[in-house]
Image (cartoon, rainbow, N blue to C red; front, side):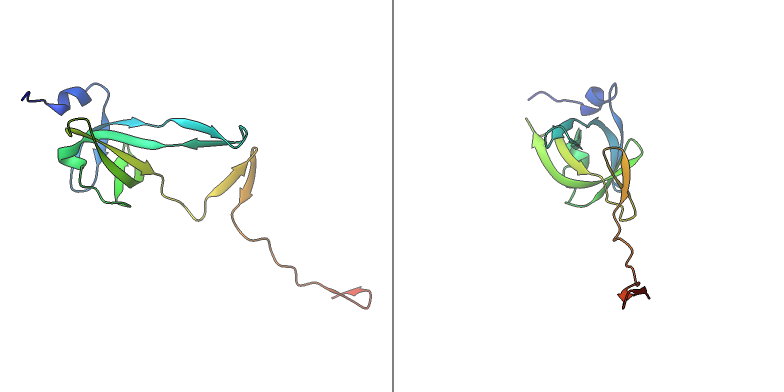
Length: 123
């Protein structure tokens, strides 16, 4: 069996990865996919890192990658199990702004109007 040192593989292209219990290097991947008739862009985040350090992360666990906080979706071992692929998602912010076609649309209900017309007069 060949003994591998995964840190040698990661040191040239790796970014800092920290789970709170373990830290090391990983290779962040952020491919963008165009969906819904070229109207929506979706980014899938994942990080390839050492299984010995990050292979037991649970769904929803916070993970800091290159200074950004993500939540773990899934952990899969790759090839011989030395590395794993951790798929990630950005935490949702209930106060965040939704942008459609460059226009800012807030994810809040429209204000309710209390005015009414009674016998032809606004009240």
